[in-house]
Image (cartoon, rainbow over all chains, first blue to last red; front, side):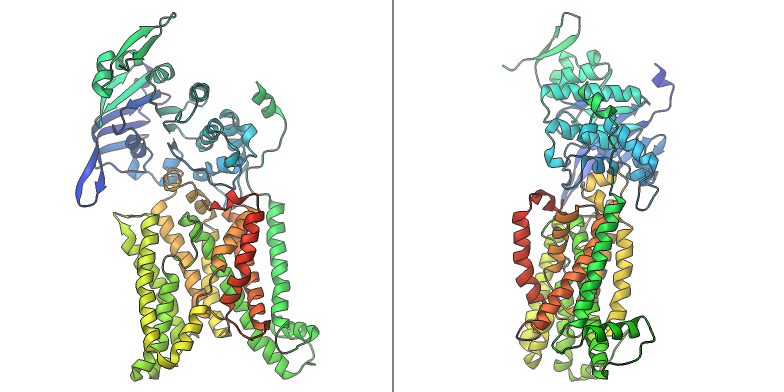
Length: 269
Length: 371
């Protein structure tokens, strides 16, 4: 693989992290996590609730600092990056984001340019091009003059993607981007992300819940369990019946579609 | 694809504020404010003709060589009494409206006003202490009349009380290097309650100074002077310039702490800086006028409804609007029968129903959420 040759865009080494709690032991979330992301990779991050997926994303974006271990972006520990410079490397599409009312979509997407801002009051031609390109790439150009309350769930998600693209990051972190989307929009969003990953040479790390969707989306799947990486590799190798039962406590069996694609059928009873 | 066709059309993409619109809004606002300034100086219980008012202002402010045809009393009234009062109203109204805009954004709370995390309670306590202490401890009375930077002891204590209380509230609310908005609001409420109780105690002990404390709490522009103005104006201007320079970061904070951080904002530092800058303006305003309510709460909402939530425009516009509205309110307070009712009463009596009307009429009520 060529990815192995290039230096990692992000590296997490022996990272431990716990959320401080008043008068009690910190709530340990990550317990010695190791992970490398290489430039141009498309990775799905899976794991049970509380396994540390969101925490990992927050560490990578610099919102949290590890208690132990190292988190590096482009070869430099996250804590040593100036904030604006880090924001030019890493963009986040969060799980919850309440878009402030009164701003048009184009203005919100232009906020994604903040890490690149060079004028005190105005924007540069470069900014305007980046916003236009982000709106087009996220399939949100038609929404440019709408207000947040005029957006459906799927449109909102396209706007968030456009905001992240306007930031022109090298690494895009997505926290459950398909949450609250219907099936068609889930597929459309993931297809768009995959196109962007190719077009813009973006490295993408996306937290997903649907195992089959993750397998169809990403050539590499990372499965977290109890704050560590339980399995990491191509979907067919990671999402085995045994691993799924061990990590999620759910019984499943593989089935194969007519074209040979391996699918995971869950047993409910 | 449908979208591809739409994207191909040459539709200009507007990503930010239009310059013409900004100039129109701010220019129009400035012009209106100038008219209000002349009205405020020209009208009052003593008649001074428009011509005389304009001539006196041109003579004294612009230094124009105009032959003196007006009576000396007119000059005293216009220049020494009305003008500082009108300018103080502008300073106080503008400062409070601007600070309210910032607090509503930083605290992401539409109910926030410039006083919400302790400025008013702290300043009131300082002022009440300044009024009462010389009466209770005669030795202090010797220093009571002295001035520093053109301010009396009461004004200085009010200024220090407001600023100091917010610092205290901020320090108490801080935990593990972070300040959560809800903690900050509740801490502000608790500290304000203690200070309010102490003000009540001072009022109880104040005897004949009760009226002075009461008048201060209701807010008044009657004590306006050039010296007080020369103290408060630079503070307000510095605060305004530094806040305006941070417009982008204030906008980003509206996205929430996490998203602002991932866009490169040092959220905790920024919140502290913004809070202190807004508090500086608030304390300066309160020191010269007492606690005038309502302007700082309502003007930001009013403007968000009218011109949108972008702080690049919202901050200067709130300064102009707050300034104009308080001059008008003070004019009302001066001209209404009964003579010299507190301006805070006028702002609430006229402003609140107007605001309700606007709120009901507006179809953009959702814009008003402030967050």
